[in-house]
Image (cartoon, helix red, strand yellow):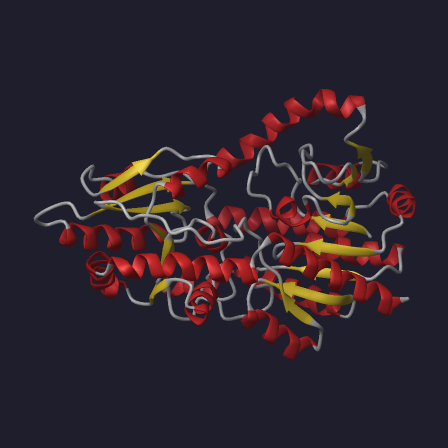
Length: 433
């Protein structure tokens, strides 16, 4: 089956080792082509046919007669020569200093205008689509007006069915934001989304909550689609260390570091007379001096250098408890109301007990609690008592090792996710015919 992917970002496994596209499509039964809206060169083992449109191309299309878009194959020698150079440029994006929200909102607003008024190279785009001749179109996007615009352009050039995927809250007004530009963009995004909903044969989300909401509002067929993981057919129990080793590998953003700080305080209480538990923190983004001073005491909590995704399995192999954290403040709770972290699947695949510390209305918490796949804490005041219970009752650690594995095998095994995608797409294609 031929699938045309529409993506906001470049599909580059060198830059993003944990890419969801590679997670779904490696060793799959799909033939792929990709239209993407970002600078940089793709680098993956799944796809070789590409059509690229960038912000710079769209801006240039407004200032000159040159329309935006170029098609290429990663088999081209010229592309191969530029690959290393382009990847290096792409890496700079990930170390870019933080932009203040007001400035970032202005940039996004300007970018929206460029993509609404810029001119696509529709002749080349049509040729690319016709040459590939997809059976179905799969659009993976964040809350992005330029992606919604691309979907409308693509569906005007072909009658192939289109399926959308987004884990972001693109529609609900219950947000804690003060910027007038944010609300203007939000209004336009909602308007665009309502217009596009009638195009979709199916709409995938990360959470049941969002799937149910969109189904009720837009009367569109919705379903949940999540990352897959590597799960062995047979469960093998893993012995627990002393001191018990806790690991957190993830971002400190969105006030997650404040939840980690509460874990540290609970550990200080646990380790008052002797070291019973330690926490190693592998940060995936920048950490400030203030955060490092508060989180790294060199006794029970340790900030570790970041590790690549493929090395994380070794870290988890030597751990006993994996932490999954979210923030508890009002702003971030609203932002994450539909958010299901990919890290949850990594936790389930770690062969460790997972300790989830999240607001009770967080989709990740709801899922883990419903499946009984993790020890779940919905209030930071309960962290100490939960850690104490896990330390005194080691049987719980072994019990939740197995429960995490069972949840992963039945719900997140690679073959399960790929079979689901193939059956869904085939059903849509057959129905369209």
